[in-house]
Amino acid sequence: MNDLLEQVWLDNTVKSYFIVAGVILFVIVLKRIISRYMAGLFFRVVNRIWKGVDKKSFTNLLVQPLGSFLLVLVSIVALHKLNFPTRLNVEIYNYSVKQLVHAAGTIILIICFIWLLLRIIDFIAMILEIKANLTPEQSDNQLVVFFRDFFKVIISIVGILMMLNYVFDVNVGSMITGLSIIGAAIALALRESLENLIASFIIFFDKPFTTGDLVKVQQITGIVEKIGLRSTRIRSDQKTWVSVPNKQMVDSVLDNLSLRTQRRGDLKLELALQTSAERLETFISEIRKILDREDIEEANVVMDDIRNNAFVILSDYYTAPVTIKEFNGIKEAINLRVLKLMEQLQIEMAGANVEVRLSK
View 1 (cartoon, rainbow, N blue to C red):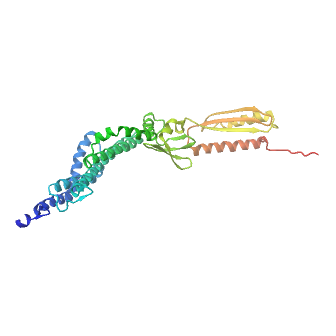
View 2 (view 1 turned 180 degrees about the vertical axis):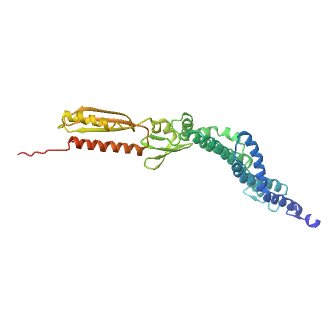
View 3 (view 1 turned 180 degrees about the horizontal axis):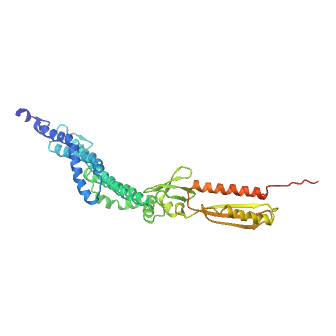
């Protein structure tokens, strides 16, 4: 038996293969248990910072990436103890198979590590979102989503730089210094994207609008559903999905309809010149009574103008900031009552009756 274990296969003893395979198999079998235990240790640290954290949610987020990272790390360390077989170490495009395998292992390890960091960011964002839900403002929730996506992008860029440094032996510091001119050119080419990114920070800190607000910008009216790094998504009143660059949301004249204190309705009537002054006075008085409702906070009725073809009566009224459906109901009720009043007083609109005379 000892002779079999000491036999050399592909530059390594059978005993070495068994030891490496046993270590990797041990990690595979106990990977979930070990990762849960390590997640529990992390949870103790996190729980000291944020009280009342759900342990199950925390462990469910970290178990899978932590287990994958642990398996890849132990596998690479264990396989590193073996001698790479000389027969298999052929060159492919000036790179040996050993170098390619080592580079692939390093890339997988970095990917697992970045995956673990992204899950930690998701957990932190989840905790902050729970706290943001306790406040009535929606801006806190959108701010959490914004910075979650922002830090994910930063960590992904760091992961790419780590691959360039540890896999391809690229000096990242020298590369960044050497590419300063190219970076300036790229920044100039991406000026619009950078302006949108800066505008997104302005939106979050200046807060001209937040998620859920009804806004009107550049002939687009709708509800803000998401504020991203580059653009703001608006569900228009036509139920379409509109993406507006953040720079335009900041630079354009924006009307935040959700912040209005009242809704205004207008009623313009052009009455026939045959209407007597007495009927006009009665008509105006009755309109004021119609607008004297509980759901109308303020109203004005005035005979605005006397033209050569009509008497012009203007009415404006203000309701509380109710929904558009409720406002349309109030508007419809007022218009119908005004029509009935015109029928009772036998008042006609200007141009309703036209008399045409033909003469030789």
